[in-house]
Image 1: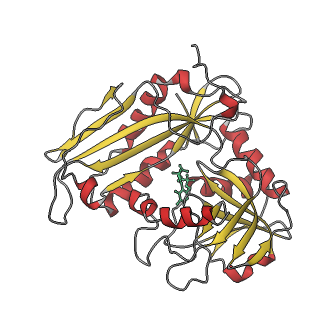
Image 2: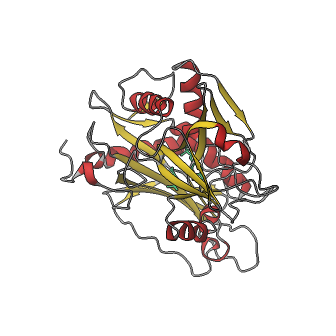
Length: 340
Ligand code: PLP
Ligand code: COI
């Protein structure tokens, strides 16, 4: 199969329409037959629940070309399950897991020419999402929904690829105690935009959000979880009820323990203890693992010993092992890789 003629090594994290996307509608209490379409446009009622009260959830996962030329996805079952959890929290009808997996397979298969070649550094990003299409004017859940899934080829989420990032401690909160911080709903991202534009304008790459209750513990960034490494090589990841349960982070915890023999602790992490860590990284589907060199807390700099030039040694091992598994260079744990 002939690949599209793109400069794969130089694409950014931007949207590019591909050949086919998947659509299914929910009406009269049930999900209808899904279909593939070439049309990227969505036409909905002016009073649709998504437009008035932001009833929307989404997911993000990637398809890869492996070393042997196969096309695979990474743990799509976990995206399907998380999306079902998000649906319950937003009073939406969960899209069944098996149908989610079939939709992923179909969209990747139809857009095989857009899956970046092995070794290019790019991947095919998949965006499943669901939104309220039915009209609502009183504040209540819609009676109708649409599930869609499109694909777009992407390069690194942060410009500069593996260059360590500078993060600032945000004055804004991303989530509320007992709110929606743990679900993947567009509303969490809408309210993070002002914080991220403010941080970028001040010269920072991203925000570090603190726990909304006490503002003393580290939560996450707008689009990735944190991961720290201590001076003696222990991996520490923040535990909180108001952060997104990252599939990348859960996979890295397994990789650290079972492939690299590292000790891993998942616990609340105080902002005050950042100065004691040797390495810091952001992890997520889009971010993969992006190293953090410096955190700035209201003018006070916390510089990790790994520095501003390259990834710390443990972060690099985690990165190489995870991407090695995704690209088929390293044997994956049972069930992690779904061949298309
Ligand atoms: N945290 C937030 C707020 C995110 O948007 C994402 C991206 O999906 C993550 C963490 C990382 O999650 P995952 O590894 O499942 O992509
Ligand atoms: C992802 O990593 O898939 C996300 O959804 C994060 C988003 C900020 C791009």
